[in-house]
Image (cartoon, rainbow, N blue to C red; front, side):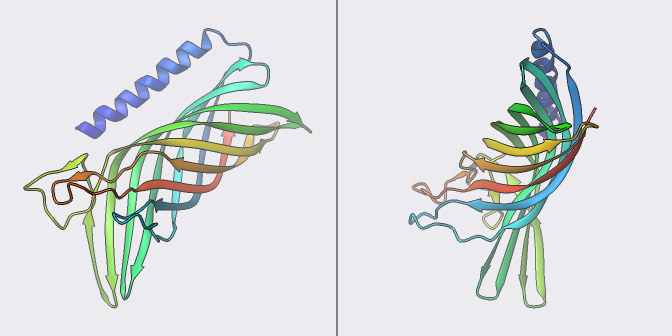
Length: 225
């Protein structure tokens, strides 16, 4: 139920943003569908201040955005997408893989300059996201196991000790560079840096100073209508 409420809030916010920006429209408003793949990681520090040594995993994303003119060659580009993130870690013979799924809203500002018959694009801006699912998978030789990741802001007494917990809300920054052809087909390179610590507080470690943040980069292919 919480997931449905948050998704509705994000969609409502996107619609309001579109309506507000269109009131000052100086050009053509357009819509796009896009999707892509990339490499994701969970970076941060352990409780001793040492850097986490996780490995990247493949993630994907797909969604929509609307492009709203705000000045000649400059646009506001809010979107809504589903994205997967996570990381992998190997200690001795134990391989651990963590996969997280998010509903994400990028809020980018974009410069589009004429280049040939198309446009070069440079964009940046914040994103907000809410976790809607996740899996923790473990492999040791021929033995494997899997469990759901629990999204909680705080781990309290009575919660399962062996479960993996992640804070549901995430936020950070986007940057991308790409090219859009005259027909509307576009390709862009993306990078994303999470700025919130998504490791929840826990009664088991009251003085825990460890951090965990999403990072990633990838490529998107889309079509603008």
